[in-house]
Length: 419
Image 1: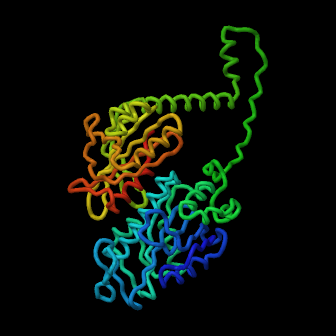
Image 2: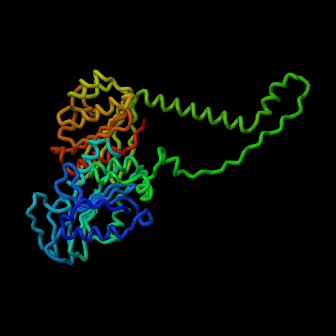
Image 3: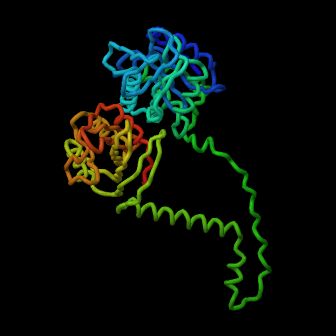
């Protein structure tokens, strides 16, 4: 674990947090990653005791000083905490420290998203002290990506293994971009130092990490002696074709067939089958999908006018049912391909501008916003493609700043698509 200290600890328990993380030691022998102490990311409600940038995730660590040591702590997300049976009184706006930590994690996720950083999951840890013997959290809160703990080397390491769940290790350059968002001083870590902490310095990490098998060469079969010309001479020559040639021919045919199937799927049509996916423990059940369509006709507001000037190459839209904080939510995912990274970046900036409109859900009429009023939105650009995720409560009013909805929207960026 590489340590970057930007300032003094904002809480008393911050010294214990720093000691517990520093004990991991440099390099990836224990876990790897970079710990930034005393960071204040853009939009964060307070200075953070630590931000752990790990190869497979980011964890915001918020320290909380209790009035005294405690035997038991009941730490739900949505209701006040109780310490040894007594309510924990606070003078801040947040109902409890867990909500404050989730707000900090959501603020960091928004800052990374708006700057085009790698869409790694951002989880929250609330480190309480001076000491708590037993901490109780509801199971639903654990699935939301928040942990309340007394800071020790083993407790923070266990939380890291549960919460850092990105599908692949983040590479060196995207990691440096994340660190620069936290603070320019944190982004000065060298490539060699990040590589030693478990961040691969490779353009294609999937290929670099794949197992390589030595495939034995298949010897060509010896051709039979040339017989006298007979009516079945052509058949004899074909039967002498080598095994390797036949394998190559079959492989080419399979690739062509797969390409044809993918082309037909991308060209248009619908895929009504319900497909369930899980992202960081959150379940998403697909209720509708559509490949193809006109981006201008499928959008509204300033975004529709923008698409009229910059037509897209391809569009896919999906709708999912999910749940958070004990409520049912609807999540819409749209993937737009603009054919080039420059217009994709311009679209991402427009979508991140409040009141600019967006891409409508499948049930909406052309040019009409649809049923996602007040939804939380997350946008991600990867090359020429832009992903737009909206999350809203299935019933009742939605709020774009709702932490639970923002968590769903950010997780929705990593849903698999049939493209």
